[in-house]
Amino acid sequence: MPLIDVHGLTRTFRSYKKQPGLSGAIRGLWKRDYEEVSAVRDVTFQIEEGEFVGFLGHNGAGKTTTLKMLSGLVYPTSGRASVLGYVPWERADGYRRQFALLLGQKNQLWWDLPAMDSFELNARIYGMERASFERTVTQLSEMLHIQGKLRTAVRELSLGERMKCELIAALLHQPKVLFLDEPTIGLDVVSQKTVREFLREHNRTHKTTILLTSHYMADIQELCARVIIIDKGRIFFDGQLTEILDRFADFKIVTIQFDPAKPALMVDFERFGEIVERDEGTLRLRVKRDRVLASCKALLDELPVMDIDIAEVPVEEVIRQLFQRQEPA
Image 1 (cartoon, rainbow, N blue to C red):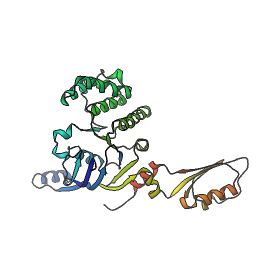
Image 2 (image 1 turned 30 degrees about the vertical axis):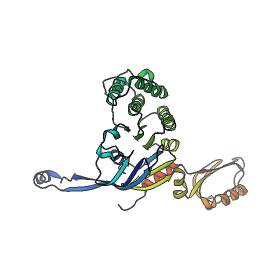
Image 3 (image 1 turned 180 degrees about the horizontal axis):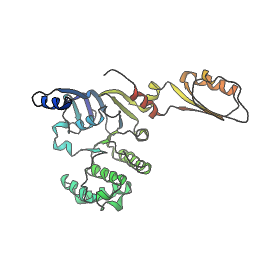
Image 4 (image 1 turned 45 degrees about the horizontal axis):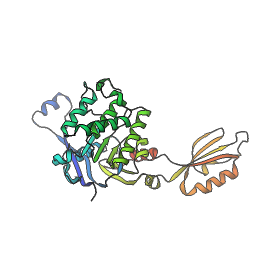
């Protein structure tokens, strides 16, 4: 049985639609118009124990709402879900002790207190033994290189330091399931790399099942073999990250370096593919997959080629194009 099992999960919100102007405000005192918005619609997926899955989608696609339902913070309108054998929104004590939710734009630490004080409070809430608590804090803080900041007031920490402390707080009770919503948002490159390496190692050593949302494709490419893409509240893709290129990118990027001292003949480059970039000594083309070999051979025959490179289209660009597609709701 999958550790996370979701079937037909749907969440619809009803919001008040205010009419403009003073007359609209007065009318609203007696009669209100409402509209229903489906944040999540018929979402179905399964995740096995120990998987590290990327959960992708543009803003408003339904990612955070799904995580909140799986965490028991939001009740679904319909559908069912099981995490660790529990129904999340029943908020059983046994379930709350085995999962963690980390929202990158929300704080769980006490702002005016040192992070260690929040850790102490969490340890008492979860009934952790003192020795286990100290060992866990030491281990996690060393992995995140944050040992010297644990007794500094949270408001005095940098964003990267605060996020590392948030991670420690979320993992202090050693949850079996971890929901991460934009954990690296706003962090500098070095902090992002530290957090990614930490999450990868924690997943490998503790077999923690992790569902990660992120707008940074470096997070997804480095951590997740499998991705689930949600668009307009519906699952659009669920599979291996490499499959996205095979299914949605029917071209490759061919880069030619040639000797600028030997001017190329009058070649119609557009017959090989779409020109992405062209300057003195460099030509970059977007070439259909089934024409790559033939195009490269012709280019080698017709140009004074010094180097040639064939690369996949960056996953980030492919997913960006998917998000920008226009479909009826």
